[in-house]
Length: 137
Image 1 (tube, rainbow, N blue to C red):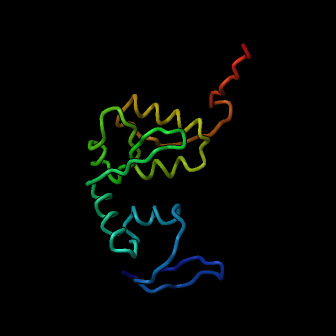
Image 2: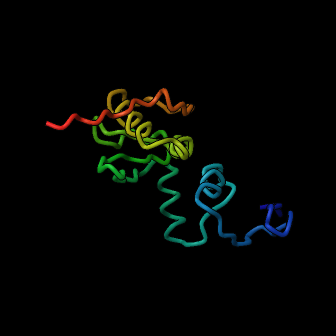
């Protein structure tokens, strides 16, 4: 590995290869996916290797109780149960600032159309359906 530059609160610094850095998940994930960084923890390193090689899925439960899978590689999508929404890491990053209602719609869409990819998320408040309050009985 070559020395690299990082932008810190003290300005841009040159770091030697092998230097350990602590990064926020949204900054670390793209570097991990491109093979430009690796976790320091050996167990995490092996987990990431398997995830990125398409050897496993990570199952998570959303805030609304729906079970979805994250596949580290497109090859791992086939490991998911039929009808389960499967997202790739880059799709998850695109959903970072999406409202919960939009994420729920995308989960439902992925369940209905397996293999579809989220290429772009455009948030428009008018585009997200609102739940109407039921009138009291």
